[in-house]
Image (tube, rainbow, N blue to C red; front, side, top):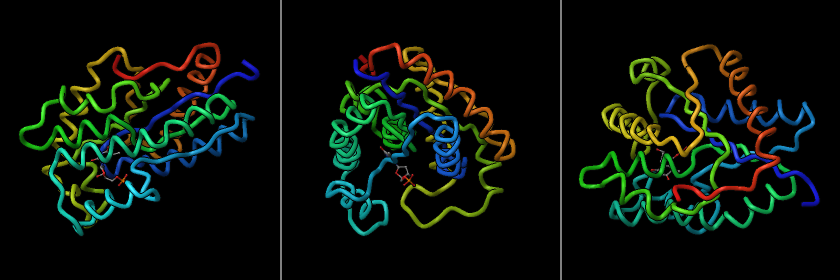
Length: 212
Ligand code: TMP
């Protein structure tokens, strides 16, 4: 390998946990420490598939649960070549949501098993670290009202949190639970420490494949 690969770092958690703020702060902190880093987010609403997802989330279109689940997954797969290229070039990617959100949100709907939901994302680049920003639904509610998008309802978010718990039982994934009720700077410090550690370990390991 010409240069050491970057790490794939994912932030997950329920809405209002502060994922986006923390992703941005992490990218800045890594760059300051001399690690090339970039942020990505899923869904990526800029692609053709992403625009279909966005219309669904904004209640401008109706799709079956199966259809939108596969679109979310396809939206990740269409970016795999770019993800691999950046990692190979030595750039660490900080990703706001990934396949875990995909599985947690769809499997929180009636009639969808965790097993079925995982299948389309089997084989995606495996994150070197998944940071789960833990915040109780009660604390999330204190941070203000949800927006108008399809999944932004407390009852549904509770069901999603349950599904995340099941996913975190899987020890093949490097989960770290972060207490997102702490202040922004303390959360950031925790996240940065775990990330620097993951970057160090990842540079000597090949990129894995998720859930296989
Ligand atoms: P966002 O608010 O982070 O842009 O995410 C949009 C919504 O899409 C959010 O409610 C979580 C949901 N979601 C899924 O249902 N499946 C997925 O695969 C992803 C990435 C997000």
